[in-house]
Image (tube, rainbow, N blue to C red; front, side, top):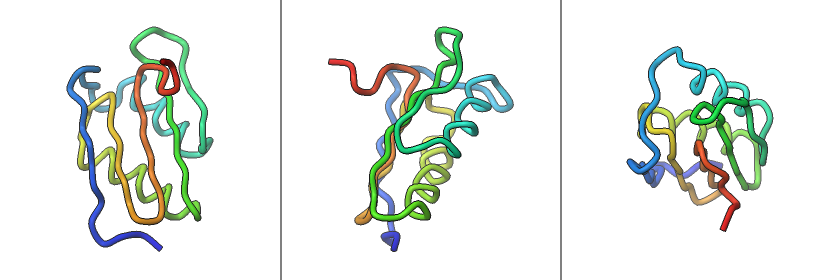
Length: 95
């Protein structure tokens, strides 16, 4: 079950990516590899993601919404009542 309204957080500190870029391709690969993985090898193009939630449909919706609500941001998160998703070009779990 997904909340009616997502709560997005679009971070500007990581920069933006271009349509059809390597970073966008890496995000697409992550969408099938969650809950916590990374894709890509080149600095700036590496995409990391972390997600938690009670069902994969909520996480999948959150992934799509984060890319739409925070279009082309390299670091974005979206919260729902039932799940959470964040992706970034930096290590999300690093201190």
